[in-house]
Length: 349
Length: 209
Image (cartoon, rainbow over all chains, first blue to last red):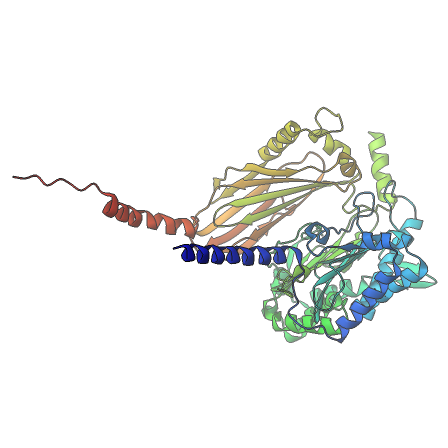
């Protein structure tokens, strides 16, 4: 009888220990990635580690957040400082070598085009700052923040957060995969002159959308147009976990040429990430093109003054002009989400 | 009155850096349909030129603090201006939660007031939901969108009027509004009753004749 009690007690204790240890592990440790790191990820991790090494202890403490920090994961916005406070270290607090290391990291994560766009948005914000106004709001080049959720690693997922006024890049790195969803891009002004050169950070996507709309027949436009005025972003910051129901014209109702134009439009956003990861995403989108919808709200004659949206099983793109003085096309917000894989939730276990 | 026009004019001239149009209150409605409830999230973001007027509807005693009672009164006032009908029958909405930002944030044009209302379960089959938002404390821009929280709900069509104050959604629900798990438990009740009756019944005494 005593042996039986001892056996049952031992069995119960070991069961409790197993459950307890696995619960603690699940709570405190980073999950493991589903695919082994490839060359791109190895370069990104090296660049991230190199940047972190340039920081002093106090800066590292400000920049690195635990993977389990759910609040920090969603701590991003298009708003300037004064209305929204980002965490991390801002460009204005980084020395020149530290900034060089940070921009090298961004270059490794993004494509050449994506990196250019990020720099153009920052430059545009500096131009806006020199125009004056803003009151208690703080913006401009110095106000772009960097932070990490999780530690840069080849085997565990982590997120690089880089953002400021009109921009929030959230790059989840998990093994071979790097995804930018959710990310917000945009700008104000959307056209400016810098060093004698005209810069238009968002012209490619507004042109691609206009080109697609113009290619539609009047009956197709009837399906695509859901409103006569431009509207605000629906799934902007703070709207995680919501999936927009498709509206507009379905990919299967488009001709091959129109489908190619739709894909061109999608590519302007997807191609912000490095070429290798963009190719993976575009392949997935191409496979779902028949079930992808294009919707337009606003004037048909003036592409840059209209809201448009692309909804696919694994993609939501929004483009929204903001009526805030002068032409609405001079201030835009764009959202890029994957309703199935924001923050790379499918890339680790 | 002149001062208001000057302010509006200045608002158009100066580059505004806030997130939304400066002279309107953006009212974004997020309607989520599930087999067990309808959830209406109303997000109110006032531009800096209308923020003061908007705040006067919320901070009733003007003490720069929003009390729970002021939130209750404000949400009741908003609710009076909203109608949500399913198959032409009004759905009774109740406040489930609210989020009120710092007053300073609202004044800058960035704070978002969020009110979440919920309504009772709805019928299986094809339905028509009509949402009307007549809340207009200041000049407003409206958005209305529908979301689903279950594969049992399918959106058939969405239509809005020009201002998006009226939103018409046709949808279907393919399973009972009553959660399946409860149905299982309901089904188990007679079985458990039978078992209990079998084991715990008091044996009847045999009457010797």
